[in-house]
Length: 355
Image (cartoon, rainbow, N blue to C red; front, side, top):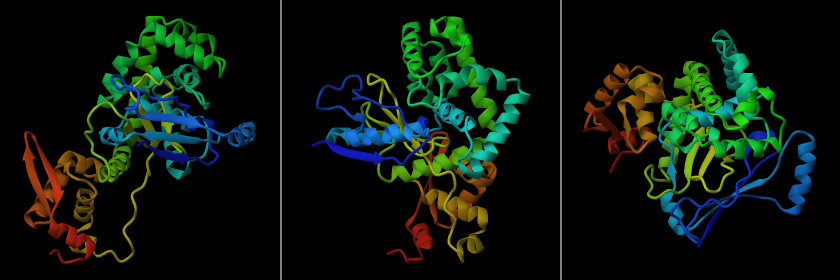
């Protein structure tokens, strides 16, 4: 029996979600598909029109699972930088988002200006990703989950017929500058220029902030692994936590593409309660390492370093001490070491004596 999960959103800037029809991943027939559906009742649509008049949208993003779909849900294993590009361009176009986003916005504008990218970003990327309910799906290829370089290559190789189709759809919502006419016609040179610009934007805008993004998204992935497997079978829904996505989830508009759901991840780690004795007992960095291991079903030394903001050598040294003390178990797999919490470590964190 299908399981419906509804995410009712509060009024939010209009870029926050892309309406998505039924999603049928390749190779999955009727009755076995995951559907990501944006539905509104007549009353909701009336409310939405009023909200849109004020520059806001309202709605419900409904995800319908069959029993088999639940086994296919997986979590993106790394930052999807092209989705972060799309979400961060919306952050750049408007104020708000708290101190974290304000600080990032100031730094990003300065860095983009200093590298000569601010004008090309304004003239090319911003018009393609407006604060509207739709922007082209080809800008966020599924293959970008394998890394930025892979995503940029796939973007540059997008078939011209798809580019023309999705740009035409975008033009129903916004007017595009004449500078994008070549791209709108599917010209290969214009598409390669767009892909190169997207890659450079991600490098310049994200590099100074990358460790912070990795820590925030790593925590969210670790939280989700308690409920879902990271390597689900088939080609079901992929959950992609995003640092820059705000307010409500975002889905692809094209139902023929592998379904993904981009959703906001908390940017800051929960602070330990007052009087937490663990830093006094182990030291602040070692306590942070232990809590990081506890938040996952297993993480590597490199992941510990990224998520705690320490160097690789420091994370390795702290993990070795925790391993010798029996608080974590460290197992070598090929060229990496996987760390997991032991019963003794869990007892120390919870204040309970392990049985």
